Image 1 (cartoon, rainbow, N blue to C red):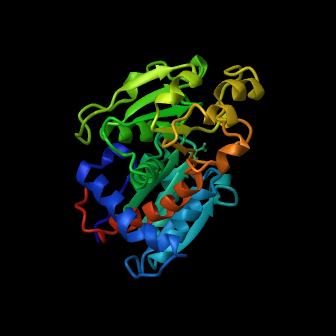
Image 2 (image 1 turned 120 degrees about the horizontal axis):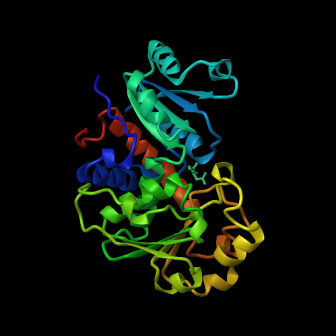
Length: 321
Ligand code: NCD
């Protein structure tokens, strides 16, 4: 059986991206929202959830999606696995392949962790977050949330706010959004921006109407012209010291709070991949705001991962890579 893998968002072409988003939106999201479903598209397949980093949303949504599609899902976390005894990622891949698993969903702290594992694992590998590198399934689910809200169109304006430098969500998300012609403003203090923001845009990929990247350090100035704002978590586990003064100071300058909600247009939407540091990048009133899609993103995450697992096993009718 031939399986499809997804390591970076640029592994997909336009038809595959559109096929995944359409299936997630029309086939799976309504069923997820009415408390799940059961079909047999993945019956008899073993799906391994190999998580070397913490996760709630990504791991649970992949597991639930796998179960709804009839797969046998098994969880392995770094803690308690042979990784603690020094086994290499290559040997782990060979060991798990020998057990007969068809699909591995992997989250790893190394930017090339998923790609390295895929060299040794003969089945499908889905990257569920690789260090400061790629997080393609998050990019797809964020685009799905925007599509469901009618905002995934050329010429729309979206700001990505906060810890841009360390964010794999931003890296994959920005590439995918630009390919739809969405214009992106990166909003952050200079210490949390990459050295060359324009180098983040891949050339000649997923042809469309490529959006533009602009950089802004003043959130108040960016908000009034936006269709969507994506807040990012402060990734302190990936940060060298001294990049921000204090979290309080950061929150004053870059947090989405009651006052800033008034600067955001009435029909704009608010995204955050989670987990949220309440009171740092997002304050409590944001959750009460009808423009907030943070929980909607979680539902979209399950639907998207259903579509992705079905695609992976060749059950979506969308051509493989
Ligand atoms: C993100 C991740 O792990 O990259 N969360 C997620 O997958 N929902 C974002 C983060 O950790 O800030």
